[in-house]
Length: 137
Image 1 (cartoon, rainbow, N blue to C red):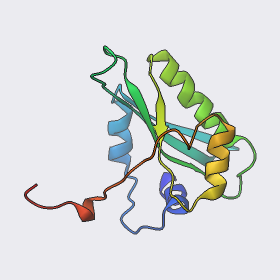
Image 2: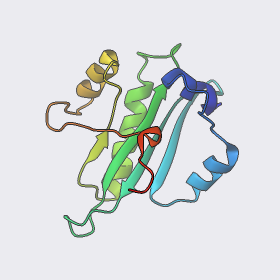
Image 3: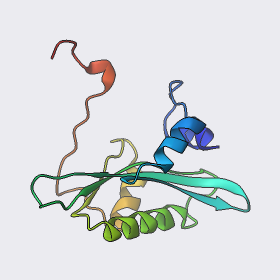
Image 4: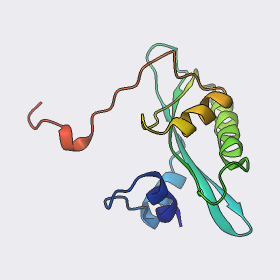
């Protein structure tokens, strides 16, 4: 299900979408795993996590991750519908902002994110993957 969608997003043999992890996420009040089904088939998914913030008196910010729409269905409004649901969730939780990262090479995705209101010119994202972590620091 979500495993095949995630493989469309990243070609990584370590991607494992397990039922136990999905069940765990369902029980986490600060996390939402949203999906879109079309004719009984999973066609898109997105994860949103709320993060506590010290700067804004209890107002969280949201991190949007793993947005993927089945390549057979792209351009049909699924991604926009998923992000609209994320935005509704964030509004209901009084979030100060929504943030997402996108691979630097995904130019089409960047255009899409800008079309739905995200700004790629206001901040710069940085990533350090686990394989780059230093032991003992």
